[in-house]
Length: 247
Length: 297
Ligand SMILES: Nc1ncnc2c1ncn2[C@@H]1O[C@H](COP(=O)(O)OP(=O)(O)OP(=O)(O)O)[C@@H](O)[C@H]1O
Ligand SMILES: [Mg+2]
Image (cartoon, rainbow over all chains, first blue to last red; front, side):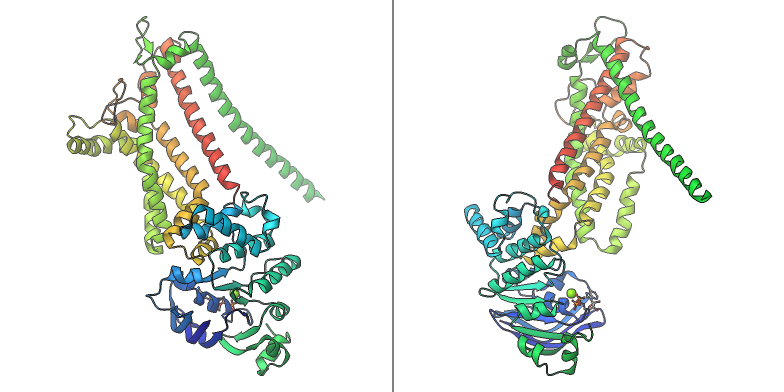
């Protein structure tokens, strides 16, 4: 689904990603783990070209998503981002109503009103949020709890029918119960989407992911099935990290 | 122990001082309002409110029975220049604020912002000068008018005066929109322009509304500039090319000569009262709209 070849990324003169080669499988959940500052977020944000906004970034190498050359300047970045949705670390609903939050991406794409209503409900159902909010769709999204907000952000993302969903520590700002709900949701979403999730929580990686990538100082140290990474890592560094010796 | 006592006493002293200054502000405000009300009521014991509102002429003559005190021409003049100035200043101001916040580089913003803030420091007489010597001739040649001292001239100048307020406060509001919201919008495939329109402007709206209201308040209450640059004609204006005389200019011109406690004297308070009500309504309305938006944030 996603092919990354010889990816190098520099912020100014500082190299943050070092010759990364990865192949991320479709309809699976791939977890990115590694100590703070190793480049997980940076790698994730390369996949939907979020670095376009950052000054002084230099990217070398190739990324292919569903036959789209992601890094090429000719690529329609808006089209790409519709295919590659993103859920952020802190829930960031728009200061609009619950309904408007989910409808936003659809309105941009010029869907008809009736169609939008239908997709909004459908997306909220898929995010396990509909029952909780069906009576207050037109109330401010900011009145929801943090966990509900994060599920709303997921609903907003799946409303535009992406193929891939990138999640950058989606549970780090949430309590255990909300985290549990999001993990359950991820388990459900994997049927329809390819998911790449950054997490600091080893247990979470074990619970939700099929594959795990361990990164260290901008390099991919080990990439394998989640089971292999946590049960029988081949590299010393990986072993130390997953056993909690550093990080 | 002693130290604690001293601290308690200092605390008390400051609390008293703050309370006092707060009360002072409120009593000054109430005092001014009371004075306006008192004199306005005195006016209405002599002239009926209906005549005041419906008469189409402002023609006070000291002592005679021939005077009429019609609010309309002054009110229409004030509303005309103010709305004209807002039509110019709102899009220009918000556009400039957007440009500064979203497109201008750090270097450009560094000199642009202080320059615009400096515009606010120009005294209104000087703006009046500019109106008489530059804008007015420009208007008369541009539109083939014998005289450029008219409502349009006033609107242009008031727009210039309202712009710094509108720009700086809007820019603060736009700049305060979290990057995370922009990323959320872009992440859904929105273009930068769609993000500005769909997320940045709505999120900054309470601040932008406050900016516009403050700018408008300045325009409505401005006296010297309109007095100098709009021709001071006491007729009912029909278009932006007519000379006008606003409520503020009328008070400023006539207050100096009017005999104390005559009908004319009270009349000037009555129109000041009207001005006060307008600015108050504008503020309440703005507050209401901003609150409606804010509840989503
Ligand atoms: N815009 C930027 N400009 C310069 N350096 C940056 C920028 N963004 C990130 N970095 C640097 O790149 C490195 C990797 O950052 P990144 O955010 O990808 O780490 P991370 O693995 O996601 O860490 P965390 O687990 O703390 O989120 C860090 O050293 C960081 O300081
Ligand atoms: Mg990160």
